[in-house]
Length: 235
Image (cartoon, rainbow, N blue to C red; front, side, top):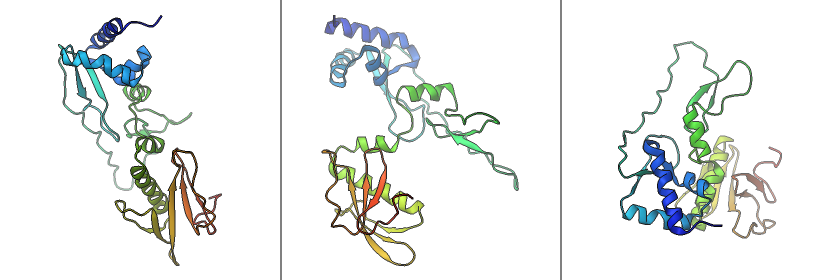
């Protein structure tokens, strides 16, 4: 039987109090009590108004993405000093670069092991943060956050711009303009490239009338199409 609102409110408060100085995120509370976002807001609002809990933006973690909000019991003393970003290692002149992978949570370089698979996280804290949904954002995360069609179009343009720049193209673009067309130069000539982001209906407009288009999917994949695709499909 589903718990009543007062009972669930008491259990949520006890969960936050038990966390102590570590605090808990919204994701942790939702996973623990299987609640939806709106229901969680209704549970937390009276606790915040009654000053039984407090919410603080997590400044101890650095990296890309918006810092998570953590909830603490009212009497918990917090250390709010931001953590320092690890220093970039400087190799002696002439020394070969260290082979490394990248931590999926904070982005710091991790030396590759002699045998076995590359490390995914640099520490147990980063592993826990990723499990709680606080890791570095993926391309899919960026597109998911862009709920407004105009914002989504700008994000799509930025992704295509990055992809073409990596491939060696020169691109003219105005990210804050009203157009979804890029002027692309490949070292020989220039061509116009239209950019389309997958719509809410799950489809792209008809592309058979376009000379060259870039199709951006919700997971960040980019496919170049049209009568004269700028990049071959198998590239």
